[in-house]
Image 1: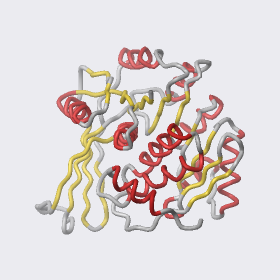
Image 2 (image 1 turned 90 degrees about the vertical axis):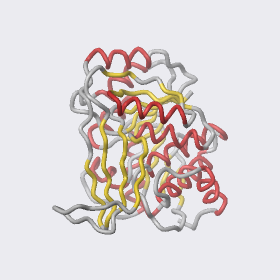
Image 3 (image 1 turned 120 degrees about the vertical axis):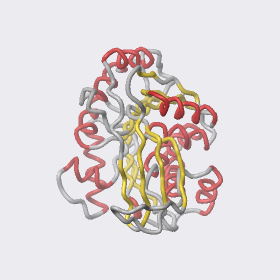
Image 4 (image 1 turned 90 degrees about the horizontal axis):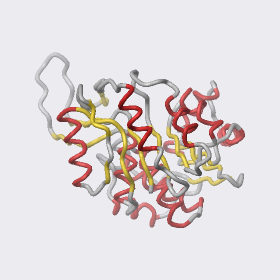
Length: 304
């Protein structure tokens, strides 16, 4: 079973405007509500690709109940911890010319709730995969990812980490199965601008030397690069299409990669399905449908 953890889920309220006028009444031309948070996005895309997962994390208040109800209606298993105080955040995403986001704060997570999450994670075995994705709320320790991976050490659980900066650097000694920085996050880890294929490959190799078993680097319009656990590089260009959405593309890539790898054990095929899923979401208004992912996968990819 794949388990995803989302520490700070959200309801995303997406609004399209003809133009944003500060200080005036703005009327929506179109609107969309979706349930967000990076781990949740991975679970949603996995479900669309026919792979079961269980969504873990913290929810609170009426907004939290709405998130869980929506996921269950989409056929996604949930095992959230419900907090006694606060409410799950609402993020507002305004699309009117330039994209503007207003992200809510989210509830404080007390120590008892964190222990409840640890007890759930203690059930995981070598048959399971754990996906940790996204930022850490200020009420949690900054090294929470490291603590979780250290707690799982020796049990054979494959861990996937989609994080940036110190969160990413901190988990490398725990030998995660997969890390997925994007090119900007890779630059942040190494403190310099990366301009060439050779530099991307060298930095992916360094992450593997530091402990990551597989390194998947998303390169936006340049596609993706994978350094697998055998030391082989795989490179793929991005499909051609009009980008409509930046939210959830990386999470979709993680889900597509896991779905491809679980079904075949073939890293090259897993990379292709990951890029197809990430690109399909980038070409959609929300997370892509299975049909959109499969269509891109069938079309093939330009030469990188």
